[in-house]
Every structure is written in C-alpha cells, then in structure tokens.
Amino acid sequence: MSGRKIYSAELKLEIVERYLKGDIGIKKLAQEYHVSYGDIQKWRDDYQKMSDATRSFPAFLFLPAMLLHQS
Image (cartoon, rainbow, N blue to C red):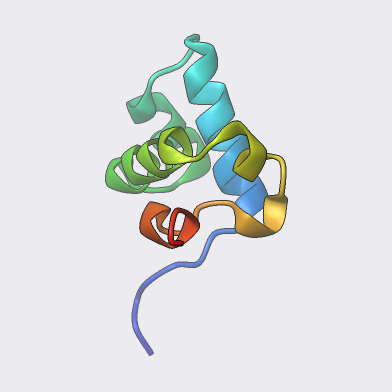
C-alpha cells in the first residue's frame, strides 16, 4: 500500500475556496488541515483551469483539466 492520502472533493473545494477568498495563505491552510503545501497548490491550479459549469458538478471536481476539455 502506498503512503498516498486520498482527500474528498468536498475537502479540496473547501480548502481552495478558503485560499481564494484571500484571507489565509497556503502555508497556514496546509498546517490547519494537515495536508501538503504542494497538494493545495495543485488543487488550486486544477480548480482555476476548470470552467464555471464544471465547478458546479461536484463529481467532476479536480479531474485532470485535459480530461475535461477533450472533444
């Protein structure tokens, strides 16, 4: 078994939205939620690549952007 942790889409969204509000930085969020700084950066980047329509469907949260834009 790998040491990789799995986080729910809801938790990722909560963290990213708190970061995007601008009142807390990635370092503090990582400490508060016990997740890595790099994970939060990746979730933020993935979130920002998604369209508004995609963000409204929780099942599709944080899928690689390339899968969301295939024809």
